[in-house]
Length: 236
Image (cartoon, rainbow, N blue to C red; front, side):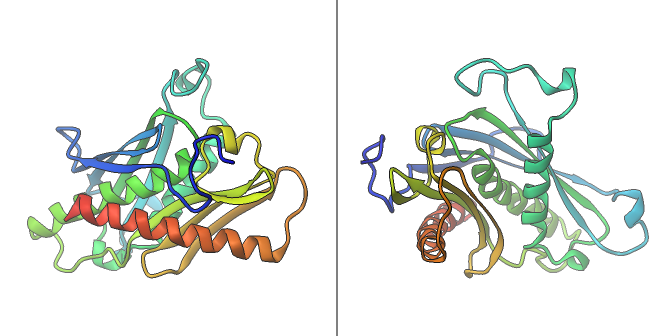
């Protein structure tokens, strides 16, 4: 039924390779099927000006796609400024990752997460959140090892996965062919312990019922569990 031949509750193959860049305090390449995203974390001992002298840390994110990450070439956004989609996605990544941070424990510093899509086949924002958490975890590990912070500010895992209704069936982890034809499309951001951070759902075709939404949430929890295992395997 699915173009990939997967079962309705089956994720694409997920792999997370860490330490892929020399200079970043934390880095990984996350691959969810044919969606590949490079995630890096940078520790900055400064915070935004509006946070000075608060004693609170901050986590923020930027997101971008390479010109040939998709089927046809797109122009670099540096030429004309970020589009609305890019701004929306990077804000989602930032607030998703902040939901797992004890900001006083982080101290008055900022960690910046950069998510660059190398290849896109659906679910790039979800892969960015999941991989962004790994980069964040690695950067925080360095702060702990150096004695720059005394307690771990990361409260829980954060992972994200897409679910939708394709060809009349609820399915987990949409790839591009499914995403482009889905009747319902949703992105689920959750913690490792099962709490919800954000749900983005929309009817691309016909409206959906509450029961259908519950079914998609159940599928998302299956995907979340697999992603958390991959995160744990990558970070030790």
